[in-house]
Length: 439
Image 1 (cartoon, rainbow, N blue to C red):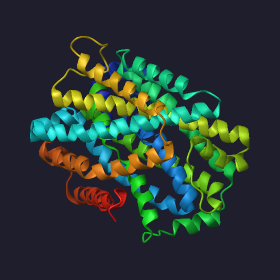
Image 2: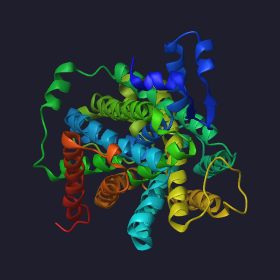
Image 3: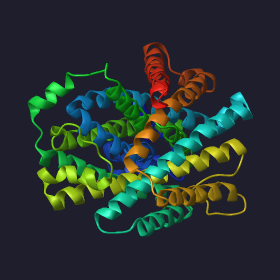
Image 4: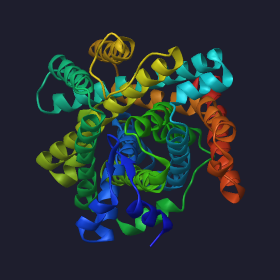
């Protein structure tokens, strides 16, 4: 058994609300394996929530567009992005657990107020953009079942604001995981779409990087995988959950499983759409109803509508929770406001909760003003790709400057992480001219 396991059994482990579990409790448990499984359940959560939120409504629509326009040739980019996603989010785990400070607070302390404001600006743009796509996704799902956006969007906003104000981070996390797991229905959709193994294999071996349209969708997928609000959220979440360095291994496992799961969901959507609508050339998706309709020929009307709608709704809700909380946390850290989900609204934390609530009000109004969901989603993801140089630059700089030597990356791992982040940042910069139609 690992030395970490022995440390857990011999001493006290701080998890969740900070409650201590003594060695006597371990003995009463009957076995070390049972104790380790308990520790696993207590520590996991921030990684799963943020990764389920990563596969948000905008990401699913981007994956659907990818499958419709390029078929199975969009699978390999999703696989390549899986380890990149892990190394980025694992860095936020170490920063949060070791320093006990949020991302915005660290930037302000290390680089000053103006750099913190720049970072907060990228966060707000990304978070509001994400919230718009989530509300638009919820509106689209409601329309599949005959519900008006004027009903579904305000109802979702009220639910999300009320959830955050219950005064419990654990409750927010559990609800986020519960609704996010609805995305697993896309694996059922893959089975029911009966993709051809030979066609999938040929798609894996084809990367038309010389095509500007393909590159633009790849940029959108990069933006769909690594988003600024994810970094702020997971670093804040491990702090609100009061995780200590003794459970950092389990926190990394939480992040690794989440990284694999979110990309497998993206791949499932690409395959399901490619196996149906992807067989038709020149297809463009403009509404949620059209994406659901793409699955109907293979899955049937009921299964196609219900499966897609349930998965989209779960993705939109969990991402709305994470992106809006991250935005409010980030601004609160930069301006020095009291912020935690473990306290109900009060005068001390009014700035944090008002920011959180206002984001939902603004997002709901903009969506009800009518937008093209698919175009908005693709644009938001490309915007995220363009913001990555700022976000990842701060992340790597903090990792090198703030963490004690024993917690910093070293050797091959360090240079591999820097290389992955540099490639993502370079790709974001490369796509700016094309995204702004300068070329």
